[in-house]
Image 1 (spheres, helix red, strand yellow):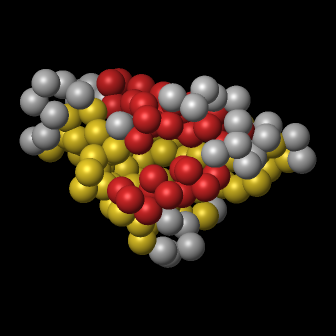
Image 2 (image 1 turned 30 degrees about the horizontal axis):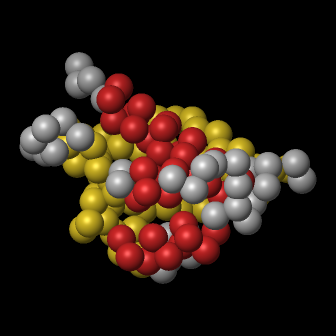
Image 3 (image 1 turned 45 degrees about the horizontal axis):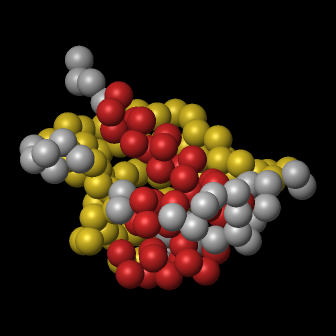
Length: 130
């Protein structure tokens, strides 16, 4: 049986950082740590079909920091899909909500690299609205 725990923890901690950043409850230094979780070669397909690279992701985080007070991100259905040399492919479901109720429900597939020293970096993310 393949052990995905470290990668699942990476997803959990990254989404906690994103939640705090967007909700405006994080210290400004969190942005540097958050962006450090992503590979310089990061790519993403957003739920609306648009494509982002690492620089576009940086701009998105800078733009949305503190704009979603009360944001909560709940994860479920974490699944390891494949372990490959240098990382994994996994999937999860993400529900975003705030005091007004549910905001979005999405499924995601992520490719996470494991660097030779053991550090994990997000390489690719594809999200689809449910």
